[in-house]
Image 1 (cartoon, rainbow, N blue to C red):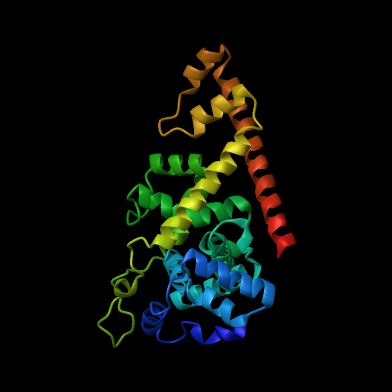
Image 2: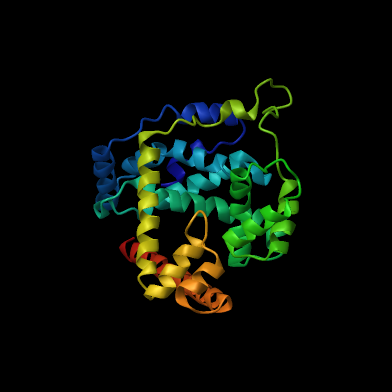
Length: 296
């Protein structure tokens, strides 16, 4: 299947590539199901090719989200296409969800793996916490409208460190390293071109496929969190929700008075509950991946 889509790699003329992939029709749920079964049950390469090409716009859209890491967008799209092909290869159409929902995980994983192997700063350390900080810092800065502010304010550093459960110094260090990789979207595509990168961004209006994929992904995350919360006892669950899952967290003082315990004891329960929650969620994700692997 890889050889059948090799000519779709965005090598050279990226703007032309982005125009070309818009020509591939999007599939209805019925068409997607029929093609998926044809590939899975009969090894129909043409069916697999149609599944991949109908989702190239999704790959490009996801890849654009990683354009701030200083790597050629064409390379990111190429890596995402590899992830898309892996998703089609392993997709089970009888599980009841759309290919886009399943493929998003493979596309992002392929792109992130490429970025992690390309950035010298990440090669210095690839712990789970560092990866989480690396891929979430820009998003959180954007929410705070601090993308172009250089060094973060102390309160911003503290908030990000709390949200990602990492040391504040790690936030400061990662922010300074990432700052050098930002590129303006107003930069020309080529030195001899008047066109800018922003002219070739994927249409930001939400497609039905993208909207459905995001809804299903959000539902999956909520279900994962809900199941993990069931592993906590009532007090742990209440304290964790009040401290970590509310827009305006309840103070340690208020919770200590509510349970008639010290603030330090509340903090200990919060930390323990969070660790148990993480462990439960990781175990469930691992179980889901194992099932997917067994079905592949």
